[in-house]
Length: 279
Image 1 (cartoon, helix red, strand yellow):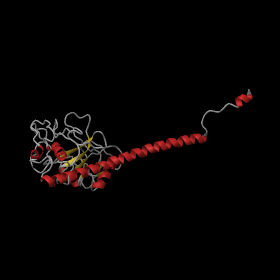
Image 2 (image 1 turned 120 degrees about the vertical axis):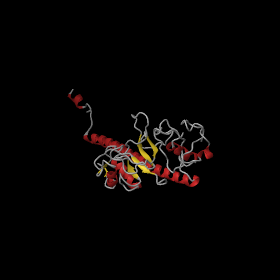
Image 3 (image 1 turned 180 degrees about the vertical axis):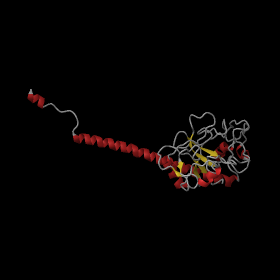
Image 4 (image 1 turned 90 degrees about the vertical axis):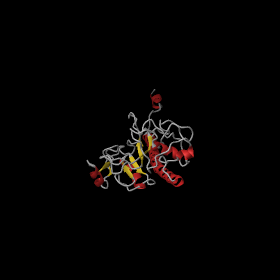
């Protein structure tokens, strides 16, 4: 009996076996983390690529047609007339609408009727074969971006799209000066927002936004061609230092002192990218 018990095999892992298993698990976890980092880096690089593509396309459009896409007064001469321009209905094929020719891509506020140049801009660029896609040029509301339908999709998030904003005479108090000059938004569409919804909600951490800003511009959230929306608007908490202004004159004075928040890893930032080809 004693001999039989002595011959029974022990179950379980030795220290060596456990160490090998833990090493394998660590390598697997490390591989996942590295993979996620590489994917994120590729997504961030795609933003730089997309913005360069859009700016190049708009510049080429201006040279070719002597007009700005969306704002072009004779677009229908090239691509046909959408009979539903005034009603905001979709045309057939390349049928489109004309802009007002004021050298800006106008947002078309809530009180205005279609056509709305910020959506026809994408359609004109596609019609001119300068970007890929198929965009209707229309929207139910002046700011309702429907990803892949009337505005291009981004690659950081399924809710990311590119939306063109435009200038207004007086900037809001809580925004940086000229934050609504003709620019492209980098953000996500708020899934809980009812009605007009455009990609202005945060999509980046402050460090991610800083990295993009440094590569493409001056690395400052309040100045240059790449900016946050403003410290008290959609990008709440993205920027710090000199961001407590309560009047437009304060914003003008503080835009050079603001920096991207170095103490947060939260997603706090959305960006406005001025279109150099329009300014």
